[in-house]
Image 1 (cartoon, rainbow, N blue to C red):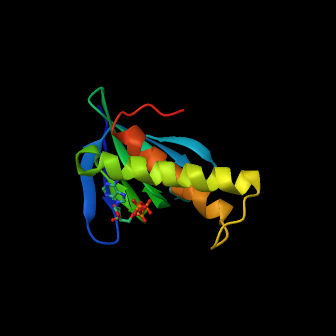
Image 2: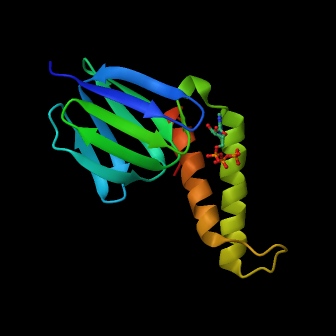
Length: 141
Ligand code: ATP
């Protein structure tokens, strides 16, 4: 089966590198499936659990956002943060999720808070927490 090299880099380390058969990501332009020999492209990534396929097995890797560069032989993900499931502190992700949900609820209800709620920031924090929980196989609505 044809392979393409995948390298996922965060600001402090190389998170993951392997020869893979397919990568499925959520880009700013929608879901993309990258196969070997893909045409060159660059796109932004939104927070989600990336799907890596190797020999019929699928693994998940949480990405908090960043960019993906595709070349026919290599995919490079420059992530603001990325974690393998074993690296994820599930309790921390659950707390981040709950915090973001509370902020979004407070914003929606019009409740005054000090400091005021940044709704967009809370939405993105929620997406990051959901990406981590999903990568660990936790079901969330
Ligand atoms: P929190 O509010 O819990 O800090 P966050 O979404 O604001 O979460 P980020 O800014 O995306 O966190 O990441 C900051 C650093 O913390 C990164 O190095 C990231 O890999 C790490 N990190 C964040 N959440 C977790 C987690 N649940 N488990 C392991 N590492 C995490």
